[in-house]
Length: 276
Image (cartoon, helix red, strand yellow):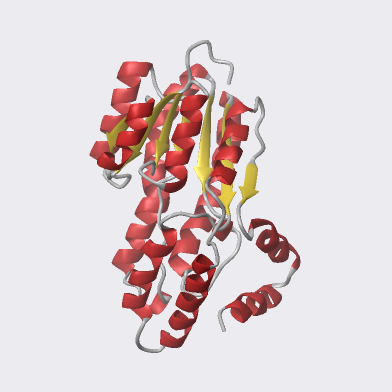
Protein backbone atom coordinates (compact mmCIF):
# COMPACT_ATOMS: atom_id res chain seq x y z
CA UNK A 1 0.00 0.00 0.00
CA UNK A 2 1.39 3.40 -0.96
CA UNK A 3 -1.17 5.73 0.64
CA UNK A 4 0.34 8.80 2.28
CA UNK A 5 -1.74 8.34 5.44
CA UNK A 6 -1.46 5.49 7.92
CA UNK A 7 -3.41 2.59 6.51
CA UNK A 8 -6.51 1.53 8.38
CA UNK A 9 -7.38 -2.14 8.74
CA UNK A 10 -10.66 -3.69 9.85
CA UNK A 11 -10.54 -7.32 10.97
CA UNK A 12 -13.73 -9.26 11.68
CA UNK A 13 -13.86 -12.30 13.94
CA UNK A 14 -10.97 -10.90 15.97
CA UNK A 15 -11.94 -12.13 19.44
CA UNK A 16 -9.92 -15.35 19.15
CA UNK A 17 -7.76 -17.55 16.97
CA UNK A 18 -6.57 -16.31 13.62
CA UNK A 19 -8.34 -12.96 13.76
CA UNK A 20 -6.68 -12.02 17.02
CA UNK A 21 -3.29 -13.06 15.64
CA UNK A 22 -3.87 -10.98 12.49
CA UNK A 23 -4.58 -7.92 14.63
CA UNK A 24 -1.39 -8.28 16.67
CA UNK A 25 0.69 -8.61 13.51
CA UNK A 26 -0.83 -5.58 11.78
CA UNK A 27 -0.38 -3.46 14.90
CA UNK A 28 3.32 -4.30 14.74
CA UNK A 29 3.27 -3.19 11.12
CA UNK A 30 2.17 0.26 12.28
CA UNK A 31 -1.38 0.17 10.93
CA UNK A 32 -4.44 1.61 12.59
CA UNK A 33 -6.30 -1.58 13.47
CA UNK A 34 -10.01 -1.86 14.18
CA UNK A 35 -11.14 -5.26 15.44
CA UNK A 36 -14.74 -6.41 15.34
CA UNK A 37 -16.49 -9.34 16.99
CA UNK A 38 -19.61 -10.18 18.95
CA UNK A 39 -17.54 -10.73 22.10
CA UNK A 40 -15.98 -7.31 22.55
CA UNK A 41 -14.73 -8.22 26.03
CA UNK A 42 -12.51 -10.89 24.46
CA UNK A 43 -10.53 -8.16 22.66
CA UNK A 44 -9.37 -6.21 25.71
CA UNK A 45 -5.84 -7.52 25.23
CA UNK A 46 -5.83 -6.12 21.70
CA UNK A 47 -7.03 -2.76 23.00
CA UNK A 48 -4.06 -2.67 25.37
CA UNK A 49 -1.80 -3.20 22.36
CA UNK A 50 -3.37 -0.27 20.52
CA UNK A 51 -6.25 -1.81 18.58
CA UNK A 52 -9.72 -0.26 18.53
CA UNK A 53 -12.18 -3.05 19.39
CA UNK A 54 -15.83 -2.73 18.41
CA UNK A 55 -18.81 -4.95 19.06
CA UNK A 56 -20.25 -6.21 15.81
CA UNK A 57 -22.41 -9.14 14.85
CA UNK A 58 -21.68 -9.64 11.15
CA UNK A 59 -25.36 -10.50 10.56
CA UNK A 60 -26.62 -7.28 12.20
CA UNK A 61 -26.67 -4.52 9.60
CA UNK A 62 -27.16 -1.74 12.15
CA UNK A 63 -24.00 -2.83 13.97
CA UNK A 64 -22.10 -3.14 10.68
CA UNK A 65 -23.22 0.36 9.69
CA UNK A 66 -22.15 1.75 13.07
CA UNK A 67 -18.65 0.27 12.75
CA UNK A 68 -18.11 1.53 9.19
CA UNK A 69 -19.47 4.98 10.04
CA UNK A 70 -17.17 5.21 13.07
CA UNK A 71 -14.09 4.29 11.05
CA UNK A 72 -14.96 6.74 8.28
CA UNK A 73 -15.58 9.52 10.81
CA UNK A 74 -12.40 8.95 12.81
CA UNK A 75 -9.92 7.71 10.21
CA UNK A 76 -11.35 8.37 6.76
CA UNK A 77 -12.44 4.81 6.01
CA UNK A 78 -11.08 1.29 5.68
CA UNK A 79 -8.03 0.65 3.51
CA UNK A 80 -7.61 -3.06 4.29
CA UNK A 81 -10.67 -5.17 5.03
CA UNK A 82 -10.01 -8.65 6.39
CA UNK A 83 -13.21 -10.70 6.25
CA UNK A 84 -12.36 -13.37 8.79
CA UNK A 85 -15.60 -13.91 10.75
CA UNK A 86 -17.23 -17.26 10.16
CA UNK A 87 -18.06 -20.64 11.62
CA UNK A 88 -18.54 -24.23 10.55
CA UNK A 89 -21.95 -25.87 10.90
CA UNK A 90 -21.84 -29.63 10.49
CA UNK A 91 -24.56 -32.26 10.39
CA UNK A 92 -26.32 -34.31 7.74
CA UNK A 93 -27.93 -32.14 5.07
CA UNK A 94 -31.24 -33.93 5.59
CA UNK A 95 -31.19 -33.29 9.34
CA UNK A 96 -30.20 -29.61 9.19
CA UNK A 97 -33.06 -27.15 9.16
CA UNK A 98 -33.22 -24.65 6.35
CA UNK A 99 -33.29 -21.93 9.00
CA UNK A 100 -29.93 -23.12 10.33
CA UNK A 101 -28.59 -23.37 6.79
CA UNK A 102 -29.67 -19.79 6.07
CA UNK A 103 -27.87 -18.59 9.19
CA UNK A 104 -24.70 -20.35 8.03
CA UNK A 105 -24.91 -18.35 4.81
CA UNK A 106 -25.75 -15.13 6.67
CA UNK A 107 -22.54 -15.39 8.69
CA UNK A 108 -20.15 -16.86 6.14
CA UNK A 109 -21.29 -15.00 3.02
CA UNK A 110 -24.08 -12.42 3.17
CA UNK A 111 -22.83 -10.67 6.31
CA UNK A 112 -19.34 -10.15 4.95
CA UNK A 113 -20.80 -9.18 1.57
CA UNK A 114 -22.79 -6.36 3.16
CA UNK A 115 -19.76 -5.18 5.12
CA UNK A 116 -17.74 -5.19 1.91
CA UNK A 117 -20.42 -3.17 0.13
CA UNK A 118 -20.27 -0.58 2.88
CA UNK A 119 -16.48 -0.17 2.70
CA UNK A 120 -16.16 -0.11 -1.10
CA UNK A 121 -17.31 3.45 -1.90
CA UNK A 122 -14.44 4.88 0.15
CA UNK A 123 -11.91 2.54 -1.50
CA UNK A 124 -13.18 3.43 -4.96
CA UNK A 125 -12.89 7.12 -4.14
CA UNK A 126 -9.24 6.60 -3.17
CA UNK A 127 -8.72 4.14 -6.04
CA UNK A 128 -6.87 1.88 -3.62
CA UNK A 129 -7.61 -0.82 -1.09
CA UNK A 130 -7.36 -4.48 -0.27
CA UNK A 131 -10.14 -6.91 0.54
CA UNK A 132 -8.79 -10.11 2.04
CA UNK A 133 -11.33 -12.92 2.33
CA UNK A 134 -10.49 -15.83 4.62
CA UNK A 135 -12.16 -18.84 3.06
CA UNK A 136 -10.77 -22.34 3.65
CA UNK A 137 -9.44 -25.28 1.73
CA UNK A 138 -13.04 -26.31 2.42
CA UNK A 139 -13.91 -23.98 -0.45
CA UNK A 140 -12.10 -26.35 -2.81
CA UNK A 141 -12.76 -29.75 -1.22
CA UNK A 142 -15.70 -31.40 0.57
CA UNK A 143 -16.34 -33.71 3.51
CA UNK A 144 -19.39 -35.68 4.70
CA UNK A 145 -21.80 -33.86 7.02
CA UNK A 146 -20.34 -30.53 5.92
CA UNK A 147 -22.68 -29.72 3.04
CA UNK A 148 -23.85 -26.30 4.25
CA UNK A 149 -20.43 -25.21 5.53
CA UNK A 150 -18.68 -26.21 2.31
CA UNK A 151 -21.44 -24.58 0.29
CA UNK A 152 -20.68 -21.22 1.92
CA UNK A 153 -16.95 -21.56 1.38
CA UNK A 154 -17.30 -22.65 -2.25
CA UNK A 155 -19.63 -19.67 -2.73
CA UNK A 156 -17.16 -17.29 -1.11
CA UNK A 157 -14.43 -18.46 -3.48
CA UNK A 158 -16.53 -17.74 -6.55
CA UNK A 159 -17.85 -14.48 -5.10
CA UNK A 160 -14.28 -13.32 -4.46
CA UNK A 161 -13.16 -14.19 -7.98
CA UNK A 162 -15.97 -12.16 -9.51
CA UNK A 163 -15.33 -9.27 -7.14
CA UNK A 164 -11.64 -9.24 -8.11
CA UNK A 165 -12.58 -8.70 -11.75
CA UNK A 166 -15.09 -5.96 -10.94
CA UNK A 167 -12.72 -4.00 -8.70
CA UNK A 168 -9.51 -4.24 -10.71
CA UNK A 169 -10.45 -1.08 -12.62
CA UNK A 170 -10.42 0.86 -9.33
CA UNK A 171 -7.03 -0.34 -8.12
CA UNK A 172 -8.59 -2.49 -5.40
CA UNK A 173 -7.11 -5.96 -4.80
CA UNK A 174 -9.19 -8.95 -3.74
CA UNK A 175 -7.19 -11.73 -2.07
CA UNK A 176 -8.35 -15.18 -1.00
CA UNK A 177 -6.71 -16.89 2.00
CA UNK A 178 -7.28 -20.66 2.22
CA UNK A 179 -6.35 -22.09 5.65
CA UNK A 180 -5.96 -25.80 6.18
CA UNK A 181 -6.39 -27.28 9.67
CA UNK A 182 -5.58 -24.51 12.15
CA UNK A 183 -5.58 -24.46 15.96
CA UNK A 184 -8.82 -22.56 16.59
CA UNK A 185 -12.17 -23.01 18.34
CA UNK A 186 -13.55 -24.48 15.10
CA UNK A 187 -13.51 -28.08 16.32
CA UNK A 188 -15.35 -27.36 19.57
CA UNK A 189 -17.96 -25.23 17.84
CA UNK A 190 -18.53 -27.89 15.19
CA UNK A 191 -18.73 -31.11 17.22
CA UNK A 192 -21.56 -30.66 19.70
CA UNK A 193 -24.13 -29.24 17.25
CA UNK A 194 -23.22 -31.99 14.78
CA UNK A 195 -23.90 -34.65 17.41
CA UNK A 196 -27.20 -32.98 18.31
CA UNK A 197 -28.30 -32.96 14.66
CA UNK A 198 -27.01 -36.31 13.47
CA UNK A 199 -25.76 -38.29 16.47
CA UNK A 200 -28.85 -40.49 16.34
CA UNK A 201 -30.76 -41.87 13.41
CA UNK A 202 -29.63 -42.82 9.90
CA UNK A 203 -26.37 -40.84 9.96
CA UNK A 204 -25.25 -41.77 13.49
CA UNK A 205 -22.46 -44.13 12.38
CA UNK A 206 -20.98 -41.53 10.07
CA UNK A 207 -21.24 -38.90 12.80
CA UNK A 208 -19.47 -41.15 15.30
CA UNK A 209 -16.66 -41.79 12.81
CA UNK A 210 -16.12 -38.07 12.20
CA UNK A 211 -16.15 -37.30 15.93
CA UNK A 212 -13.58 -40.06 16.49
CA UNK A 213 -11.40 -38.73 13.68
CA UNK A 214 -11.58 -35.20 15.00
CA UNK A 215 -10.76 -36.29 18.55
CA UNK A 216 -7.73 -38.23 17.34
CA UNK A 217 -6.60 -35.25 15.28
CA UNK A 218 -6.72 -32.78 18.16
CA UNK A 219 -5.25 -35.19 20.68
CA UNK A 220 -2.42 -35.68 18.22
CA UNK A 221 -1.53 -32.00 18.22
CA UNK A 222 -4.36 -30.51 16.21
CA UNK A 223 -3.84 -28.08 13.39
CA UNK A 224 -1.13 -25.61 12.52
CA UNK A 225 -0.38 -22.51 14.55
CA UNK A 226 -2.46 -19.52 13.37
CA UNK A 227 0.86 -17.79 12.66
CA UNK A 228 1.14 -19.64 9.33
CA UNK A 229 -1.99 -17.85 8.14
CA UNK A 230 -0.89 -14.55 9.68
CA UNK A 231 2.26 -14.80 7.57
CA UNK A 232 0.04 -15.02 4.46
CA UNK A 233 -1.96 -12.00 5.58
CA UNK A 234 1.27 -10.03 5.97
CA UNK A 235 2.43 -11.08 2.50
CA UNK A 236 -0.85 -9.88 1.01
CA UNK A 237 -0.80 -6.59 2.94
CA UNK A 238 2.83 -5.81 2.10
CA UNK A 239 2.72 -6.81 -1.56
CA UNK A 240 2.31 -4.10 -4.18
CA UNK A 241 0.58 -6.70 -6.33
CA UNK A 242 -0.54 -9.60 -4.11
CA UNK A 243 -1.37 -13.04 -5.40
CA UNK A 244 -5.03 -13.83 -5.91
CA UNK A 245 -4.78 -16.81 -3.52
CA UNK A 246 -2.62 -18.00 -0.67
CA UNK A 247 -2.96 -21.35 1.13
CA UNK A 248 -1.22 -22.78 4.20
CA UNK A 249 -1.85 -24.92 7.23
CA UNK A 250 -1.98 -28.62 7.98
CA UNK A 251 -3.22 -30.76 5.07
CA UNK A 252 -3.68 -27.74 2.80
CA UNK A 253 -1.09 -28.70 0.18
CA UNK A 254 -1.98 -32.40 0.25
CA UNK A 255 -5.73 -31.96 -0.03
CA UNK A 256 -5.62 -29.20 -2.64
CA UNK A 257 -3.19 -31.27 -4.72
CA UNK A 258 -5.25 -34.46 -4.52
CA UNK A 259 -8.50 -32.63 -5.28
CA UNK A 260 -6.90 -31.08 -8.34
CA UNK A 261 -5.65 -34.36 -9.77
CA UNK A 262 -8.07 -37.03 -8.59
CA UNK A 263 -11.41 -37.65 -10.22
CA UNK A 264 -14.54 -36.98 -8.17
CA UNK A 265 -14.92 -40.69 -7.44
CA UNK A 266 -11.25 -40.96 -6.54
CA UNK A 267 -11.49 -38.07 -4.10
CA UNK A 268 -14.72 -39.53 -2.69
CA UNK A 269 -12.88 -42.77 -1.90
CA UNK A 270 -9.99 -40.88 -0.30
CA UNK A 271 -12.28 -38.86 1.98
CA UNK A 272 -14.41 -41.81 3.01
CA UNK A 273 -11.34 -43.92 3.76
CA UNK A 274 -10.42 -41.35 6.40
CA UNK A 275 -13.74 -41.57 8.26
CA UNK A 276 -14.14 -45.34 8.48
